[in-house]
Amino acid sequence: MSKSFNKLLLLMSMVLVIGVLAACKSAEEAGSEEGSSEKDGEVSGVAMKDYGVGDQFKATEPVTFSMLYSDHPNYPYQEDWLLFEEMKKRTNVSLDMTIVPMSDYEQKRSLLISGGEAPLIIPKTYPGQETPFVASGAILPVSDYLHLMPHFQNAVEKYDMEPYLDTLRQEDGKFYLLPGMHEKVWPDYTLAMRKDILEELGLEEPKTWEELEEVLMAMKEAYPNSTPFSDRFKFESTLNVAATTFGTRAGWGLGNGLMFDHDEEEFYFGPASEGHKKMVTYFHGLVEKGLLDPESATQEDDQAIQKLVNEESFVINANSQSVIDYRSKLNKALGEGNFEISKILVPGGPAGHVMGGSKLENGIMISSKAKDDPNFDAMMQFIDWLYYSPEGKEFTKWGVEGTTYTVDDNGKRQIAEDVDYVGLNPGAPKQLNVDFGFSGGVFSYGGSTELLHSMFSEEEIAFQNGMHETKETLLPDPPIKYNEMELEQATLLSTPLLDHVKQSTLQFILGQRDLSEWDAYIKELEAKGLQRYVEQANEVYQSNK
Image (cartoon, rainbow, N blue to C red; front, side, top):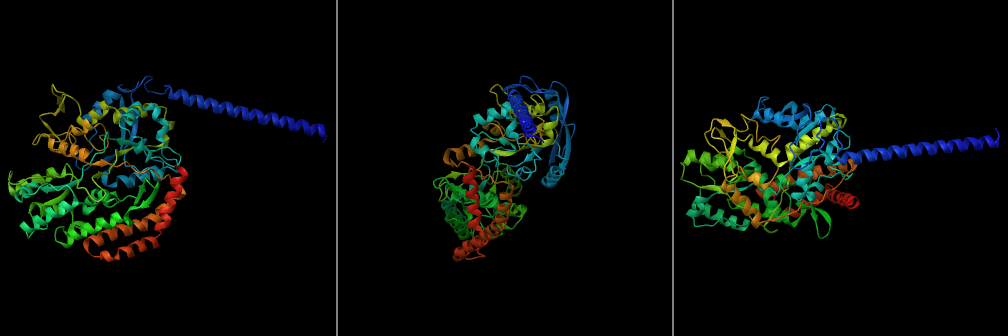
């Protein structure tokens, strides 16, 4: 073969390669332009062409989307609920539900997603629960599609949500969960206390954990046969709210155990800190003095409540709903007007009068199959209106004006005379959630503080305001953006560590392990890989921040 022919072949090959590269570049630019125009308002299918903040979403033609539904036993699913009838009327959307009992929801959700059989809309997903499905590509990076969700974007800006959304971002910088978003951190769990006993003993509501101990001692002295504080929720809720004020993590809030030092810009393991030692020492002291029931960590909720009703105790963990239940039971046992029980502000501790928590609530994953649906844009607009617009949130919470509620001349919502919900209208024959489908956990969460407070009693609003007025709200820790392999390694390291923390924390508190063994406990954590766990977290954080 001649040299000139070889040169000709080489020249032709170069031309071909350049042509292919140019074509690829043109296609890439076209794709980029297409994505850009999409963000500029070009939508497909039955989506609204001009949809923005304040607009009522309504598909241009009737459409059906599939959804997974967590069925609550207290208000079981009914396909003829007014919720669905009115939803279709307002949005032109029907929902094809896959009904799963609440008790099996997490397991069934995982099986459906892993098997590629999940519905398009996957609600009732708490932050962090989406992570196992990211690497497989089974769920969408929803942060790529926020241009279709003007109300979501508006809420992010109005509620200063970016620090909280950052906690959802994965290694690629995207987030895969559309979370419920609150205007403010919503504190709920704290201690409920017999205020009439406080008044009888001439005591003020305790403002710190030290003052709480003084109150419990006075109660014990006045009622020697009592154990003043007998807790429910296996003591997990109390440990959670207390841990923040001691500068650690515990109970329901243990999480991965890691905490961020903003001065040093690094993570450390909270349950190995001096704050954790102070916390277990404090609660051990309560147990040792007969002020805290050691059965708090093991007894069922009904047992703890019964001790309160029998006046064997006077203090118990509570939220805004459970305190109403306590009153109902105490009314039957002691007679209405013969007692007073209410929530107290979370006591301050060595870390100060601080309040943890998040503005995020459970939210929605979107199946990756949804992107291929011709009405994907409309689906995202529908979700945006229903879950993030003020009108959609009022609808899913309160229902239909004139049927389930009215609005007075001052703009205050009043539940209808024949409807009850959370004690707003005791004795009414119908329930807002049971009979109409509103205020249910699949559709109604997040939103403005005004909307949140609209169903609260004056007492609960006073608690909320008191917490925000007297507590410093701590910002969330920055995310640790593990990749799939790093996450697997972190999980392998954290599992034995966290199991040991849970066990040892209760052992120290209950006196099953002497506090003099604290240093031994730290060495046990180190033997289980504590140092490597913390090092890996900081390495990943520093490389991805």
